[in-house]
Length: 384
Image 1 (cartoon, rainbow, N blue to C red):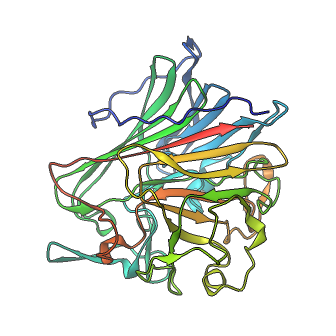
Image 2: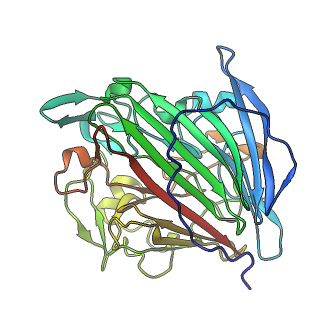
């Protein structure tokens, strides 16, 4: 039996991008949920405070840090009503600062990889911060995940949530233009977690924002996700070179380990001798979604853990989905509750434009120009 069946809904972010003065949330009841509660999580070396916000609505419990917009935990009930945290994270700010697995973080200015950290826009060549071999990954050495965001809590009808704000100055990590970013996390009365991204620029730039939650629906630290069943609504994917940069091809998934058009256990083909999986040590690829870019979020993927009964359904308006099978978790990271994270102990499903789009003219464009507003939405719906 499915508990807390979630309705996939979407909404554009509110228009204003300027941060407002923050207040401490209270535990007063709001219709359908509880007001976000603010507490001190830790301090950076320079004394800057990092806060944690706790939200609860519709059976979903969410904890978010002002550091990188990180989802530190997301708790869901199983088929028996027992709660577990289903996302990987750390229990102290020092680990978030010092280590770079991107646990639960907001990713920007450009999610995924840009080949050799270079691109040309309007005749001008730009060299970005390089942090993944010769390539730029997730915005560079100090992407959006490595900054403190301004946070404003809200309640709206039966919804509760957070507005998060960050201003990336012209030239930061090599990117042109001052980018004003607003991200809204909403927990609906049905327990859906919706993310609305919004950004404006004063100079032509490239933008590709996403969320980097590591999922294990059996509970973080519970072991491998190879028994999780995954469906991806995509007939093609983007093969990569040895540096995980797309070759430009849109290859068919049919007859390959990349075919998730019907629900399949992740472990069934993860060790196949396919050259693409040998290079990536598993799955770390972008799927070109059949729906393409849409005006509203549409279903793109479903994840199910048979042991707990928990399910995750993702809807997005983006053209791509990066499925990463936790290949580089190596047992050196200790997460919340003192649990060690090993290879394959979690997976990421990142809604996005395609990797290296600024260098791939056949891919959907990620260029944002002054006077235009970048908007995209992703909805996570849960069940058990």
